[in-house]
Image (cartoon, rainbow, N blue to C red; front, side):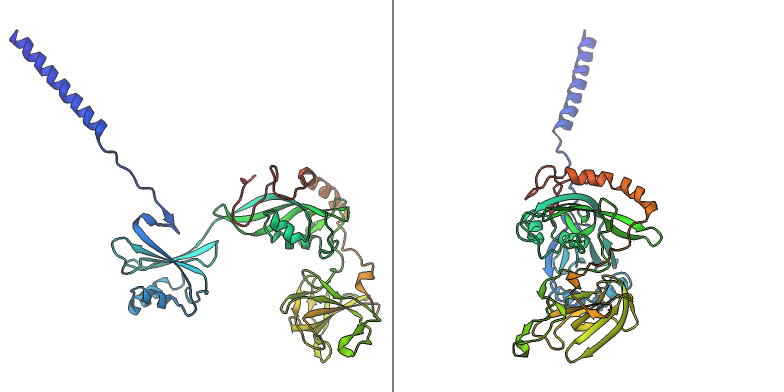
Length: 429
């Protein structure tokens, strides 16, 4: 009997001990792991961060000395990062970051300089000194957008939340077929393009337009990117009938052409006492420093200065056509140099007889100055016949996509649109 009681007591004791152990485990305080809070690859859980901007007169050494790091240490840091990070030129207004260890705010441990959204430099300032440049990975996204013109193409893009720089790319595509300073209310467009992003939200620029549709004065104009010359790898834009959208000549010598004075043989000029002085050129107004473009391929036959013309350039394109560009601030080309359509040959200025900044564009046909806007200019070289079938097959999916994009004044469901900061769609790829 005594033995049975003893065994029972023993089993109860074991049960109590086991229950105690389970209770202890269940009531134990859980260990919480701190999640890394990375800023430029540095865990902010261990540092105090100060964000600043480069001021006029700032240098890397001056910034460190103002933060408790003496010149001998600065010299050692510069020697350690030599050839890895260049801090000789810090641009005014650009941000930089100082990371201080939480145990002390006397001196920073890291210096991070980030002049752009796609790259930054990290420099470790204590113990194991080192420096490295970090290039952020970019993601290319295919996007779609559309709009209806109310005033200008740029404002339409801006009001629709589309990257405004798409304006310049679209104007390049249609530079030879649409005068973007004469758009009408109700003109409309659709475009398929690619844009690059870092951090999935910050745009680092439009990459290219793959296909577009522009309706101007009720006339539809398709555009499809295609390599028209496989041997040279030249990419151009063609309409849905495989006809090149490019002409042998640009409509004007500027990226955005604004005509301030047309070719006029009976023009009266206030500068000459309001007397009739034939104006055999076309003036395109622009601010000083605006790039001037060669309107077609050709050879520079003159790059000089005269009292009336100021700095000017004359290009011979072939046996029929020649062009001239007057009043440049500065010339970029020399006589005998071959230039291609769209090459920068100089910059808008006010040299010679002129009352304001502009480029006077002169156009010769068979040795006679004529109005370029009244000439039936030749088309660019058409797509080769052996590539036409390949082109026709290539554009089918893009034309289908374009036709399915609805025209909207603002981004709507079904239209993929990004602005410069926040994407609202996933990568369709």
